[in-house]
Image 1 (cartoon, rainbow, N blue to C red):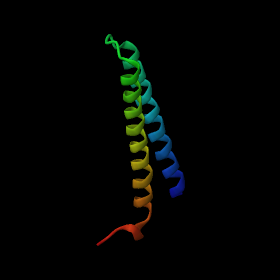
Image 2: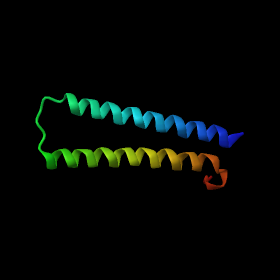
Image 3: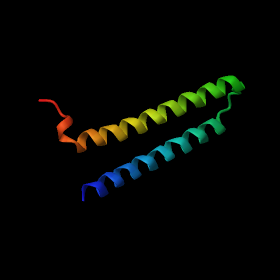
Length: 73
């Protein structure tokens, strides 16, 4: 029963990540400011690093919650 719940939570987090990425891309496309290619590349790299960080945090926080032996008293 628990693996199904974790799978659902992971799917929800993935969906939220996709929505965040789409919103950021939409904002980039609407931006009136001209961004130079290197600056835009660094911005996208930063975005991707933040997204990966959220995913890792979600993944490992779920694993830690699922395993009571990892908790300290």
